Image (cartoon, rainbow, N blue to C red):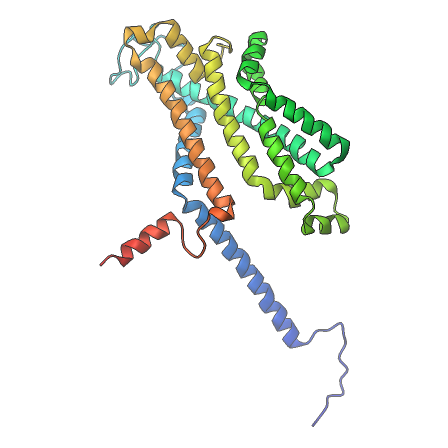
Length: 330
């Protein structure tokens, strides 16, 4: 048997090894593509998520583009308390203002309050819950005690009392009041999950490898708590919209900016219910209900996508199951 006399350098891999590495890299790339496709399919195969996102996009587009299209909501454009017609699709108020224009402008105001309060409350809950649970020690004990104290205090009476004192602060004061009274429940859940996750093998391996604490929290811990963070944000948005509407209806919120709550406040003050002007107070109330429904559907849909226990293994989603049933029919 002939033996080659050419020396083989250990730094130069042979052709089979290169071929194997190429095959492995292609397999990894294919796995990533398949993983992305599965995630995209999971998002599209959840009917609750699709319907909720469509409804939410209608409100978001209306709040952004609507004020540029309709007339000024305070302009006197028609007769007093005119019912819906071809000229005024949602009728007019007691002062001759178009209800449709007020509803469109109020959509942006209510969404602004909801999303701003949700973002602030979510950030506070992450800082207190995840930060305290990850660092541990006396800081964690103090933050946990403070969270429990905030949970004991009734939220709605506290909001009403604080809003009555900061009545002249505008929508910014209402946003801060709602956000600072709705973070504690999620912070407690995030802390308990962080205490469990921080002792996992992959977190300990990241610490041993010399990763920084902020990177461990952002890369290793926080993605495992994404479902709780998303649920906290969505719940706070719904709570903020409802709370602001309630405060505005009671006259405790600023009436300088239009929201669905201020529309109900003016309708109640001008006795729209006694006058039979249903077109004045029904649309904002219906919008509040539809927004809450859309956010609840998004919450349920995201829970199905992010929680592997709720996914159906080995089978497609809702639409795939319907197609399979149709194919099985004779």
